[in-house]
Length: 152
Image (tube, rainbow, N blue to C red):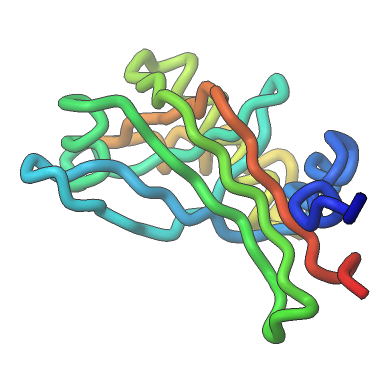
């Protein structure tokens, strides 16, 4: 019996976690009013084991997620087919508008992506970033991963 190619390239949970930690950008897909996909790329963080990001409250992605909270996110790398790796997560977006929750998300995103920032400035930077923003917690329902470096 032949080897299932899908099983060959699927990452373990530990590999998925490590892969996510290596990535800088998160591709976010939600649905426009007409059902077409809306895609954008954002910085993100991991809080309490969930991917989080923030965006302007009036941005199209937040408007879309208020109307329909279904979300798909993608993290990927590799420039040649045999080097492609990725993690796609389908789920629901939980929107965070409260000051404390939004501050936590903004702080985590800044801390992860603004390396070298004086730690004493993190809370001030997070407060500034959180203005006019909405946080998003991706509540994962399905994780799909691939690592083509495993292919013969």
